[in-house]
Amino acid sequence: MDRAERERAIAEYEDGYRVVTEALVGATDRELDAREAPGEWSPREVVHHLADSEMTSAIRLRRLIAEDDPLLVGYDQEEFARRLYYDRPIEASLAAFKAARETTAQILHLLTDAEWERSGTHSEYGRQDVSVWLDYYRRHAHDHADQIRRARATVAN
Image 1: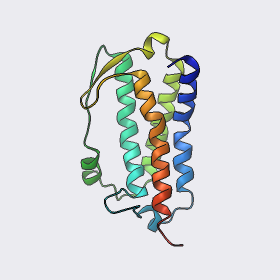
Image 2 (image 1 turned 45 degrees about the horizontal axis):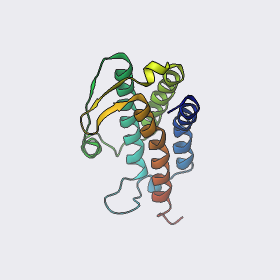
Image 3 (image 1 turned 180 degrees about the vertical axis):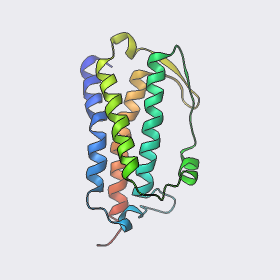
């Protein structure tokens, strides 16, 4: 990933919080609990997932930069959803998501070319460097914003 591609990817990453909150504007409790299909997450659950994922990914990035060849341990997102009370209000999770994104974006803008090459091993996906990390997380919130919109659309107003 060259410098121009990195800047576009960082901009997309930074825009993730906006697209999620935009997808949630005016959502009723009924819409927050709607499901696009059986077994899919509701918008409420998606928001909690985004907070958990963002906090986890923020630590992973920091470990890639600060540690030599770290092991990045995966987690069971479905188990998180079952055990971490994903039926609770979303405001605190939105704040956690926003803060993790903002602080991480600041770091991304400051990385040297050598730091972009730093890597570790993900327990589920193998070798990852900072560019691979960013390539995944720049799209993550956008994909979930689409999921939120589709789930909300299932509720007749």
